[in-house]
Structures are given as C-alpha cells and as structure tokens.
Length: 242
Ligand SMILES: [Zn+2]
Image (cartoon, rainbow, N blue to C red; front, side, top):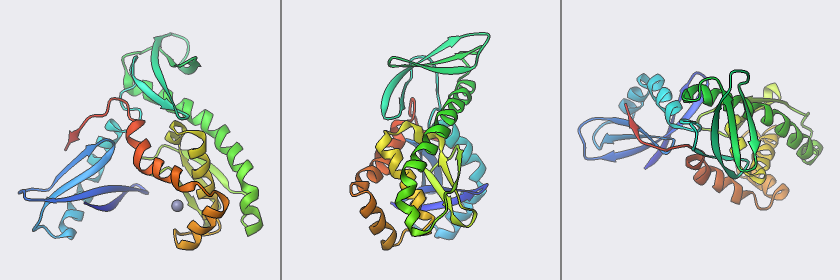
C-alpha cells in the first residue's frame, strides 16, 4: 500500500494505492478513505491520469460516504469526543441543532432528508467551531508569539482529508468543521500544529521538535486523528465503488 494524492478545486485528497493481480484500475471509498487498486503492470503515471479524470466523481462519492453522511434519527455521532444519539424532530419553524443530555437533536421540516440534516448539522458545527477555534487559538498563540508570527486569520471549511491547513503568506489558518468531532485535547493539537506552521512552513524535523517542546504528548493526538477518528465520525460507514 502506498499513499498518494490528487487535487480537486484547491483541495488535496489522499488515496491509498494497492497493486493486485487484476485487469482494470478500480476506485473505491472505504471507511472514508479513497482506495485505488491497479494491476501490477500499469505505470503510476497512467493510474494518476485515471484518478485525475475521475476526480469529480471520487469527491462526490467521498461526500456521500464520509463524515455525517447519513444523518437520520438513531444514528450515533461523535461530537467533541463523546458519542451522541441523533434525534431528528419535525418542526416547521426552525432548522437547528440542540444538545439534550446525550442526544443531539436536529429540528427540521424534512426529517427524512439526510442531506438537509447534514447541512443543518454542519451549520451547527461551524457556529460552535468558530467560537471554540478562536478561543483555543487565543489560548495557544502566546506559545508561538515569541517566535515572531502575527496572530492569524481563522477560517472554517468543510474538508475531506485534512483537519487543518495553514498559509503563512496570507497569515491564515483553515480548520475542518468536522474536527469538532474530536476530543478537546486533539483539537488543541491541531490548533497548535497549524499555529506553528506560521513559523515553520513544512514538516521538517525542526517543526516536530518545536511541537514536541510545546506539547510533549502531541504524538498521541496525531496518531488518534490520523488513524482512529476519521472512520469513527462516519455515520453508518459503508463501501462504495465508482
Ligand atoms: Zn502540518
């Protein structure tokens, strides 16, 4: 298995390439991860070309099968590191989300429309995220301030394969709204990671060393976010193929 990536509308999307004894190139999504399998004999350039042609379709498939895909009543969903049961309640007046003990409740005029539920839920994550990420950035910024970076502009976006990104030239950091699924410690790790990119615009050893000095247990959060959380925030994980 090798890790590769392609870009689609400014977004870098990772995929796993698997070589197998088969005739054709196949593209699928499993547990929110793009998997491309190809015959041993097909050159990498040809596979990459095929993936580029299919980029739009792959992204569509990912959107249907990644975080918050099937938000219907009864779904289990992770929010801030805790599992909630989703309840969707018909209401003519409001499209909103409330936390009620261990339930997340979506009020909507179309309870069976899971795509609309998803939009309402993402809107909720965005509102909560704007507040939380601003608070955490303000809390952690003093750690990197002595290194000379100005306080960044913060943005929130729905992203498929990254938890955050930083563009030091624009002094801006973008967080993935789905990061709101993670426990607060893991969210702090991403905030600090992106803040530190204002100083080190790469993942060279100096970057990780500086991060380790500021947050000695960062690897725990990094591993969790890279290996465990992604499939677990998915509601009703299933397999799909183009
Ligand atoms: Zn990074």
